[in-house]
Structure formats: C-alpha cells, structure tokens
Image (cartoon, rainbow, N blue to C red):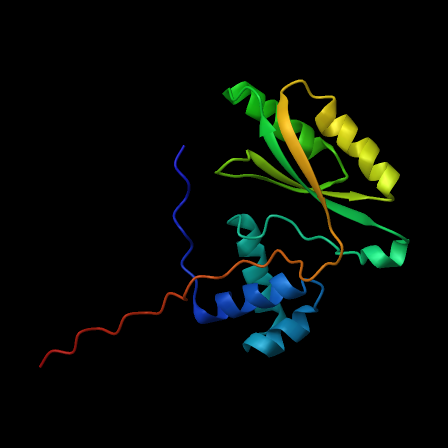
Length: 171
C-alpha cells in the first residue's frame, strides 16, 4: 500500500505544528495568539492534523532525574538469521518492552540501535540479559552506557509551507 502524499501546509500550519512539537500542552488561546488565529480555528486545525495522521499522539515528557537514578544505555544489535519473520519478532519484542525507549532498524554492520532506560546498573544488566543474551537469534550486541544526556527530542523538520501561486497577469 503506497504512503499518502505529503500534506499541503500553509505558513500557519507549519508554525502551529512547530509550536505543538515543542509544547503540546499550550492553551488554544496561547497558540492562537502565536499564529494569529482564534482558539476555535486553532482547535479545528489540530483536529484536522489528527484526522490526517500528522499528529499521532500526545505524551507527557517526564524528567528522569526527578525519579531517582536512571541508567540509560544504547545497545547495538546484530541478528544471526535475517528473515522477515526474525525481524518482525525482534521488533515486536522491543515494542512490548516498556524499558525500551527507542528502537531503530539501521543499515551497516548493526541491524538495530536500541535505547534502554533502567533504574540501576543491575537492572540494566538484567534487562540486557533478558532482551539480548537470552535470544538465540542475536549474533552480537554491544551496550554503551550513557554518561550524560546532551540533547533529547522528537521534533521533526517541517516542510516549506505551500504558498498559493500568483495568477498569471495577462493584458
């Protein structure tokens, strides 16, 4: 099934989506002031973004340092057998594990990059053993502990707004 065509966004759409990517908790009134629309017009646009699949969900981003120690780790994974079914099974296991924060299938010597969040080094070790060492189809994995978080985010670069084309002026 082909993917839908990219949406046609005007300048207000691009500005509003950018604001929402950085803080979706802003009020409709505040967003409207920023983009020059009434709160009800902003609400209609946001409803359209959801209907069109531009906004897939809204989440709260928690500060991991406020909950006590958190160990973050990046795990590089190579599968032993690479059938469609093996990749599907690995991806499903990663999706179902709450401590897997992100998982990317990548090109190159590794098949996946997995970001884990754990309560302690011991918890991280047990998680790695359960997710990777116990899987007979994992050929190799390497765990890189995160010392410091420099930047996190999920914002996407937005397309250039679709601007109406001026009509040809003919004498």
